[in-house]
Structure formats: C-alpha cells, structure tokens
Image (cartoon, helix red, strand yellow):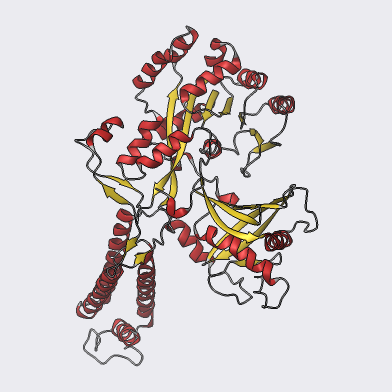
Length: 573
C-alpha cells in the first residue's frame, strides 16, 4: 500500500519528459508538488472509508468479506486507470469517481438494510473523538467517568477502598448504556438493589447489586455529579459525564431516600431527548404541511393528546419549535419541565401543585399577553376556561390532554369547558399521537401472514405479501454458533416512530358539536377530511416493514400505561 501510494504520487506529480518545444525539462521540473496534495487527500479518504465500511458492515449484518473484496478490486481498478489514463485531471477524476461509487454502493446497501438516519450522530461522535480530553489511561470497554475537572477518573487499584463502588457503577451503567437506555433506575429490594432501565419506552430488568455496594455506588455518583453525599433523604439532582466505547453521554443523576433505602434514577442525555422538529415526528408529508399551516395562523386553541408515556412532551416541544421564538413572545406553564427551549419563557410547576396554584400561574402568564401559551397539563375546568378565553384570532393556545384519540380529546375538552359552543368557538385542530418501536432493520424476520389475520386488521390479503416481526430465535453463523445483533444489542427493536391522528376543526365540526351531534357524525367529517385513525396509521407502518403487528397491539392496548410489563431483552416477541 505504501509503495503504491509513493508510486502514484510520483506518477501524478511528474510532467511530460520534455517541454512543449521539445527541449529538456528545467531543473526541478520533473515533480509538480501541488499535484501530490489532492492525490494524498483522496487516498486518505479512501483508506478511512474502507476502515469504516469494514467495521460498520459487521454491525448492520451486511456481507463484510464480499464488501471488502469488492472495495479492493475497485481500488486496484482505480490505480490502473490512474496510471493508464493520459493527463492528471482525467486520472484524478477517475480515482474520485471510483471512490464515490464504492461509497455510494455501500450507502445504498446500508440504506435498504437499516437506513442512514444514525450516521449523523456517528459522524459527530467521530469529530468529537479528536478532542484531547483523555488525560488518564483507562481500560477499553469500561464506562469511563469524567470528573468535575474535565479529566477522566482513573481506574482504582484493587486495594483501593473506592474500588467496590467503582465496580458497582460499572455494573449499573455498562449494559444499559450499550443498549441505548434513556433511563436507568437503581432501587432497593429485599436482599439487593435491582437495576431496571428503559429503552425506547420499554422497561427491562438489569443486574442485581448487593445493598452495601449499591449504596457505595450511589455515594460515588453523588460526589461525581456534585451533590451532597452525606444527604440520604432529601431529593437531589446533579449531572455527570461518561464515555463508553467512544460514545459520550451526559447523565442527570437524581437521588432520594425512602423507608427501604436510598434510590437512584439516571436520565441519559436529557438535552437530546426532545430535539425533534415537526418533520421528524413521523407524520406524512401532507399532514406536516397541514400542521405547519395551522401553526402559521397563530390563532385559537390546538389540543395535543396522547396517553402517558406516548410522546406527548415530544409533540408539544416539536410544535413550539416550529414557531419563531425570537419574533414571537412564547410562554409555557409546565409540570416537571423536561428540557430548556431556547427563546421561550418556561414557567415550571411542581408535579403535585394544586389546581389553585396552577390557575394563579396561568393567570399571571396571561397578564403578560404572550403570542403563544402552552400548558402541559390541563385537568381543571377553571384553567381550561381561562386558556380558552385568552385564545383569539391573534393568539395561540396549546393545551395538552391525556386522551387516547382526537375524539376522546374533543369530548374531554367539551366537558372541561362545559359549554359546547364556547368549546369549539376558538378550537382549530386536535392532534393525537402514539409512539412505537421500530423493528431492528438488521435482524427482523419476514413471514407470510394468514389472509384471515390480515382481514381482521383491515389489510388487503391481495396487496400484503410479507410482514415483519421481531425474531424469536438467535441468528447463527455457518457453523451453527449464535451470532448477536450488534445493531440492536439483542433487543430486536431500535428507535421509535410516531403515528398521529389529526382532526381539523372546521365549520362542519363546529355545527355538529353545537347541535349536540353524535360521534358517528364527527367521524364522517373526519373521513371527509381524509383523516386516518391511529390504528390505521400504525398498521400502515406495519405494511412498510417499519414495525410489527405485536408492537402495534402492545401500544394500542397500553392506553395510559407507559410500560405494561418489564420483560427481559431475550423474552421480547
């Protein structure tokens, strides 16, 4: 490789053996140094590309050997053309073309297998890897803890009193972080403290840690996160940073005491959790445009609904981000504020705040006359009436409701207001949503569904040939040995997608509501608007191979429960 590189550089840099007049080349004229630079850049990019493809193809279960062989053949062809073609521009152009073809072929194969949405995050992590902040040598593969001074915490020696606590932290964090957990809990049980963690909204059971070691781990993490290690009862919140396998994470550490003992909750990368825009939620393109059009109107009331744990906060924040926070005055009233929103005034309330305190805060926000108000929880008629009264042709109010569908949200809103005419006078739109897990694109399995099953799901057996589900058996290599899926870490699902039911409150809807019409009449208008019910939107994702029938049934059945069960990873269907 080195000899080839040197030969290519010399060949690229050497001009013709004589000048245009046929005379000898002047001293120093045989080497055009500037021609070496683009060639070196192209070859370095090509080498980095081959290294990445070799590693990534294993993770996403693409044929590594065949890809490496094809890329080497492509490289040999590139060198041949480089030497054979006359003129430097043509030669370097052929080299660039072949590198681009190799990259394009692989990205196309990867896109058809698992998609490309995760590559942006991986590229950012690769760029961050160049930052020189690792000043302490640590063991590769362990969770590497970053201290308050920005330096890595050294691995304690075997006889160091801190060693048991350090090892307990490793047991607590390593497996959940590798599986992309968004939350990790450590709670005391009968004889030990039990680790449970959430991945894509589903709970999994982790390891057990002896009570004494668990207490030491909590104390260790409190010190690192900057909270008071001596305080065992009052709730405390701190932050710390760790890296694992080259991935950097920010951890929000919450500790609190109870009669059973101290417990710990770790939220992983809390600032990244609610960064989606409206375009990222999973709505169809025409639905996105409809929602954006209503956002631009900036008038009246919009109801946003979902059961607990089904993406209501994500939906709220995505809608607010669609407004221009620098041109509009936006205020929120939130219980348990999830994250900071740039340019938006967020008024936080404790989760146990009484309705009177919440109403007082709402009235204060209204007195500030903002262009947009968002309330994250409306359960009191007086609060609903105050918000409904503030909304006008130039003021927008977003109201969050815990409801299973747009029709349930409308019924709840009518009940809160107590007057059907007032309830729909300023109402513009209702959006109800659910979130479900995506099947792992690398290891999902296809099957031929029974025609009767398809009919029960309102699917056409003549149009649906293959559906996909999470595999129930381990993958095996040619020798019969189990092969784990590195893409989903044996969880069978990776990532989540949203499905939404959107109901535009037009004049037809208002007339039906004011006349005390039935829900069937409302559904007829919904169909006239070409709306899709939540289950229809979810089953459309099943037909696309994005998720499974089992996942749709789990989410639709879950209702107000965020996690109906806590199965172990290998027990997932």
